[in-house]
Amino acid sequence: MAALMMPEDLSGSWRGDLAAAVPAPQSPAKCPDGMLPVPRGPFLMGSASAHAGKDEQPVHRVVTDAFCMDRTEVSAGDVAAWMKSAGRTPVGADPRNPDSAGRALPGLESHPAEGLTWAESSAYCAARTARLPTEAEWEKAARGGCELGHDKAACDPGDLRAYPWGSAAPTCALANHQQVGERGPRLCHEGSLPVDSLPAGAGPYGHLHLAGNAWEYVSDAWHPGVYRNGRGANPVGPPAQAGAPRILRGGGWNTFSTNMRVANRFHDLVMGSAAGFRCVSSQGQSFTVDQVQPIQMVKLTGTVTREDGAALTGRALYVTAFDAAETDPATGMPAPGRSPAAEVRVSLDGAAAQHFELPVPLGGTYRISAALDDGSGASDMPAAGSGGVGFLAQPVQASGDQGGLSVVLGPPPGRRHHP
Image (cartoon, rainbow, N blue to C red; front, side, top):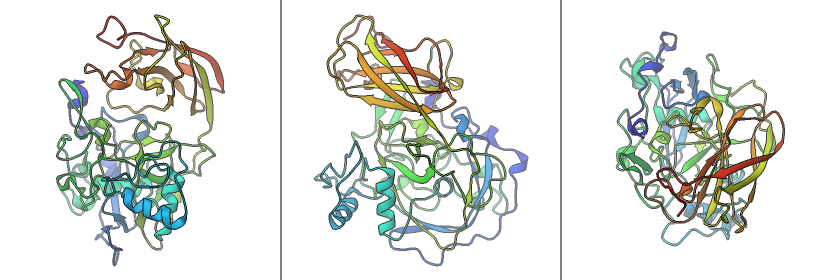
């Protein structure tokens, strides 16, 4: 917990080969209403800090052309109006705002849209003659370009800003999230905030809520191996296979302080936090497609039981896969700040054994855990594990579909018995 409370330290992420001259910034001639400009030029992408996952490395220099990006997340009210005019209703499995009928929740019209799919988010932007930002554009807007560092004419260590507002640790005044403190995680707010709020946490070009409030889709498919030196100008991820994960950025209102980092990469294989989005507009860009093999998915299946044999009851069961290289072999727990490789939320039927199916990227080695949210709202740990936590004893090598996995839930840490 102490590690999660510390702000990200990027002092060890700088390398001399990242230095480069910065040409005079070139901004878009004019941005559409509601958008703010991000100038053309280089920035430093990624992180090699203690909080960074392997897919955030190496830090590398990227050039983006000028573009315009929505100052705020797209609101539920705007999405609901678009759906009504287009005769659409949400198609995802977890529509939250707008609801399953396409209506913005009363009183939350100005809050971010949450629970849309990547395809719906893309369609909304297209209806505005816009698009989702690339992952590089999103991080450029959140971190800022090399024209903002100690040396305005060159990339330098001052260009490795950890958060949209700078280097200070996240607070509730800067980002709507689940702040980590000495007594554990604490929600800043019981849900999202209006999209036009928390100006103290604005990014370097004036965009709001680039950290916290709602996760944000970008255009790229997620891939753990695209980061490298020399990616070229305007990089974009490889074409997505059917079912391939899509990248989420920025953290949400119920995610930890480490998810507020501008370099943090997440994806929609883990959907405990609903996704939102914002749009960009640009002209004349030529993109460099990352040349890597697309992600292929396999399925891990098995059952979850409790060590006392009692029925699994409560709100939900979560089965999660972490990259084994980023977990403690003795405890199975991930290193501070690491994001899961995949997660599935299983609805409970009251049986003593609950079946799960967990899609994961082919070829990885994973530590599998399960956590039962029994609805007790535990004060000594996150609610997701309030009814018990368990781990597979050995990592799973995902060389193909694999069945017969069995996870046994023990009491939550710090408790002798299940509640």
